[in-house]
Image: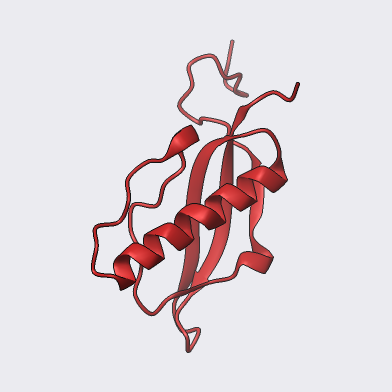
Length: 100
């Protein structure tokens, strides 16, 4: 049985003329990088479809996946998306180079 962990998916995003760019970040539970990429793409497509239909963007879905918004006119580069296990930078249990 595969272990479910929290993943982060970073998808490069840009305007059509490529003058503005950034990264759209998705997080949620998955059993693999492949599943995380798939889930992120699914929630984005659902959010985009809702926006196109004039509906409210769906909230958080199963496993914590969701898209809080859609930037009109921006394009996501799914081929360049990267995914990996999420590491909370504010976790008190996380080891840092500053620990005594």
